[in-house]
Image (cartoon, rainbow over all chains, first blue to last red; front, side, top):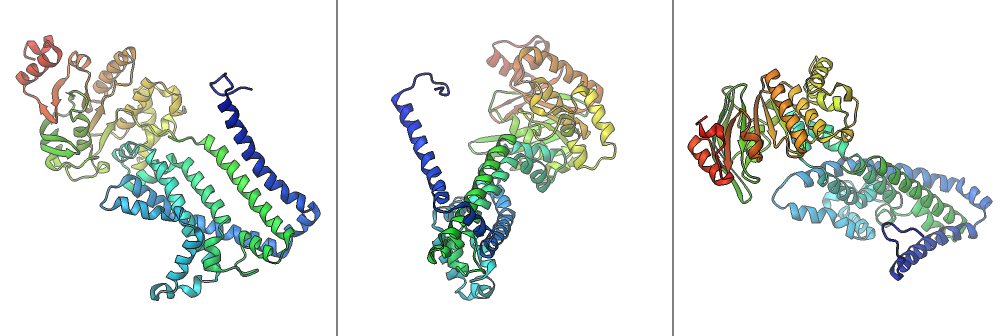
Length: 264
Length: 233
């Protein structure tokens, strides 16, 4: 066996590789168990059922809209956090990342409580137990993550690039979109892909705010939950496989694109 | 003419103190000083990247102290060149022209490529270039916008000794050919004192231009006074 930069095969190397193998087998077994439980024909008919097709469509639409809305805010916010110094920046930094360390179900509960207040009450009819509520819940969960990824990306780009661009005639905004943003392409793709996967799989905050109504607010994770409740294992397995397949495809895409656009 | 008057700026523990500098049109001025003496801070103040706490910067009689970098018409070449890695050589050179929507973009880019002798590399990516070629592209990019002044921050630091000699010669030729005003900061005492340019010394945030003070400083720093300066030139 060839090991990177090390010819000796120590007991630690064995332990490390055994852990890797165990982890790999654990996830492969999880996925294969779905196939063992449900036959391909049953799976195919479930995939084409009206309910699962509705879930796929709703999940794709809401995750895409939440990701787009999140990036519109997260990219400039991350740029501001990376480039500008202002009083209370540390506090803003910590508060913005709070949703990463907070369970989504708690975030969803906070959203629900907000819509119960006099200020939130104005919009509650549009969001609570409605499809826009799904998008808002997903946005709440992914925005901190996208901001974190983009801030790390901008931190890795020397501001001197933008300074040079400005001496060449760019305004601050032009220096951002003509220089900083293209240089952040790799991080941007990662932020899009991870936010989108995370939004697609979002359950806790979604259920709290938009509820779990069949054929109304039934995203793929909600479909898993609802079909588990009615003991429809075939449909549940179909939803699990779709989510796993989409997630895996997105991760492969990140890996490939990450090689094409390495960090500056 | 570039005129810096009583410029002061505090940056953390470091301070530029009461800097005065005059550079005539077409002159190639060298500011010499050890690392951390404030040379780059002074250049960035002139470029508009840093805003000084007090003092005044004038270009051709116009007070530019409060102007942002994009309105100063300055060519700035930082120490690491900072060429845009997502653009090719010619895209880097024409960057400023495109931003300014210059009409003669292609002709001007070609002229700059010819000036620095890199016409064959116009479609190359930046990471394919040698350090010397990167320096020339950075010079061409800064010169393309026809700046009032070219600010060079340690332009030869990253080059080996052969490339340094060649680049110094190239810079002299480019200066003669374009007549652009140059302010060039460096910590390379030996290389700079052998040139024929006007020299000022930056030490601990202060600029020394008086000849007797320069001689005293160099005597302390190098242990000798270069021949040109001994004669009082």
